[in-house]
Amino acid sequence: MKILKAKRIAMTWAYSPSYGKPLSVPQGAIGLFTRLGMEVVLAHPEGYEVMPEVEEIAKKQAEAKAAVPSVELTT
Image (cartoon, rainbow, N blue to C red):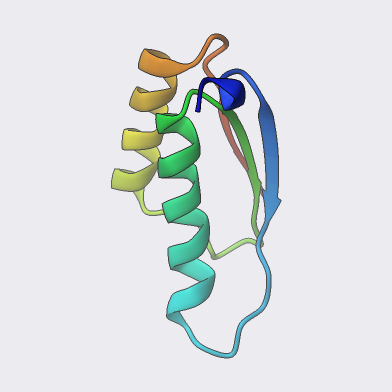
C-alpha cells in the first residue's frame, strides 16, 4: 500500500435514500485513507458534518502517517 502514500483523494457527499450511508461511507473512507498516508479532501453539504471523533482520529492519523499531513473538510 506504499504506492498510495502521499496521493491525494477528493470525495464528495452523494445522496442516498437511507440515512446511514451518506454518513458512514465518507467517515469510513477518511479513516482508511489517512491510515494509508493519503491526503484527503471531503466536500459535504452543510448539515452533514463528519462526527468530531472521526475528524480527530483522521487528523491524528494524517499527522502520523502522511508525507504531507492533510485532512480538509469543506462545505
